[in-house]
Each structure stands twice: as C-alpha cells, then as structure tokens.
Image (cartoon, rainbow, N blue to C red; front, side, top):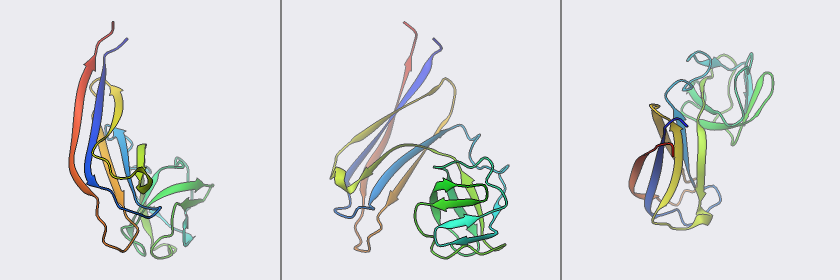
Length: 171
C-alpha cells in the first residue's frame, strides 16, 4: 500500500497526417535514467550487416523493442526499432539509409517502454491521453516520435503537451 504517483500525458494536436500507413506518433517513457544506454554506456561496433540488420560480437542484454541509434559510419543518425535478436545479429523494423559496414558503423542501444502509437487511421483528434504510473519519488522521462514517411510535406500540428500529477494514498 505504498503511495503511488500517477502521471497523465495529454497530446493535443490540430491535424494528423492525412494518409499513409507509416504515419505515426509514438509515445515512450522510462523511469529515471538507469537504462538509458546499454553496454555500459559505450558504443557497439558492427562486424557486418545488411539493409535491415547489423551483426555484432554479442547481443547479450539487448531485447526486441530496444532502439538502435547509429552514431558513426554509414547511416549515422538513423534510429531503428529492434524486431529480432539472435546471438550476434539485430534485425530492425525498416532498412538503414546505408548498409552497415564492418568496423565503421558504430551505434548505441537504448531501452524505452512504448505506451501507445497513433496512426493515420486514428484520424484527426483534439486530445489523446495516456496514464502512466510510477513508484513514488521516481523521475519519468517521456519521448515522442513523429514519423511521416511520405514526401508530400504533411505536418503534425501539435498544439500542446500537458502532464498531470496525482498522489494516491492508501484507503
């Protein structure tokens, strides 16, 4: 019956991208900063790769759903969601902008918890809210990813982002 802190995040937007199956807004969070980067906060180095996979010496500790962020070499700046993990290979949700190269491609892996994803199929909305609960005294970090893969120049017009805080006491 420990006290819990609950937060609610409201996303108010004016227009969501009108079409396209890859248009999405994803909300993610993590508690504190203890799981920010895996591998003791150091970069991984590719030993090879393909259009949508990278090979490394060991994938120990990496999970499906973690984010791969290319920090050096071909595809620098790419952020991809890991969808398959084997002993030495990570497969990502979509192709890299350039194939990873042995010893040149460097990347980090971060762990976030996905709360929800809105797509074009959800249509225009004025407010969407997510409830997040976290233990008392813990900092919560939010991350919003907006993806519009079309080249038509559509935009997501975000009006405001609001968080709410409530403390619930045992009854």
